[in-house]
Length: 417
View 1: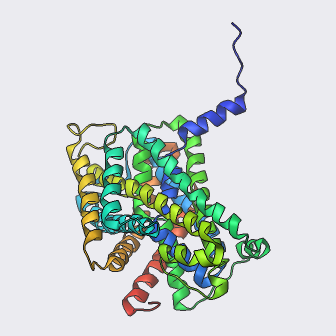
View 2: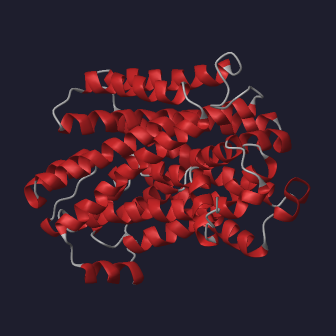
View 3: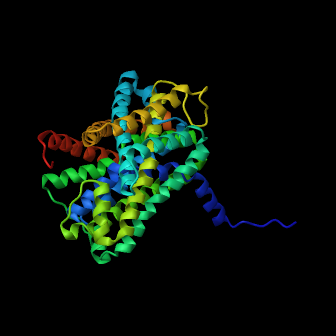
């Protein structure tokens, strides 16, 4: 029987699809409930201005996530594991405490996002929040990494709803294109805080920990690196395209009518009378899908990091007997988050604010540690950072450090609130 010769380009596409996963999932999970709220606020308050900022943020995300993925492929270890080995217990303990506080607050935000999106469809949060938590936990904890990755990739497709929303709205594409290529910045405090929030919801500490750990967990080899790099780059670009479409949808409807919102559910409700019921449904569906994706990924990133940092067995390819701490921490984070969301009168906004502030403090410190690791010749060999990668990475770290200081100062003084 004559063998069918498969073209080389088709083989390469097959390899890309097989490698695709960690980068796309991480970037898609960045568009979570706080992220959608941030982009909705930016679009409804400043119109298309933030589209050029999204372009800049995309470059920064590619640089940072590529370093994490490269370290995962070369060392076969997660970020927390390497930090413990190279910088000692004290630095590791501080980083883990900050990450745990920040991620718990952000996980609460995801469950709140699920509850809010369900209530837009007339479903009680007291029913949907525990149900979603149980379903997500069972799906994650009872499956292998390969199975869970497929589930998470499917969930990431929910973001397409925002593209469809914009197509239905049909914005002035000439204005959109102009806003992308011609940056426009304001120096008033509220605008600066919005820029910081946009950076903070896109380039996150948990994203770095999760990406490197999932690359290591997937067992990718150095020979796979070029495909992993494509996954990371494509993931960052795709995730920020969705961010841009959220901004466009709110700018083209809410901004032109002088309506400003500060949450995703507000945006969905206001869209209905302006752009029709389908816009509300699609926007709400995107919020639900994004929150479910992030609910699976965020506790995983925390659990990976804590287990790596303190030497516990971790990974979805291990069962409960092999990695009990891994499974207990994951379940505890989700259970505690559900309880917090369902407490009447709980100040969810304050919890989100605290988590974002802790993230802002942790991110520059983590970036410095990642840069040191990525430049360690003993650790990385020929795969250590190039001069260009260092220039971009150091420049981004300095920039984020400066805006983090500005965020803390403006938050402390109550500016922009």
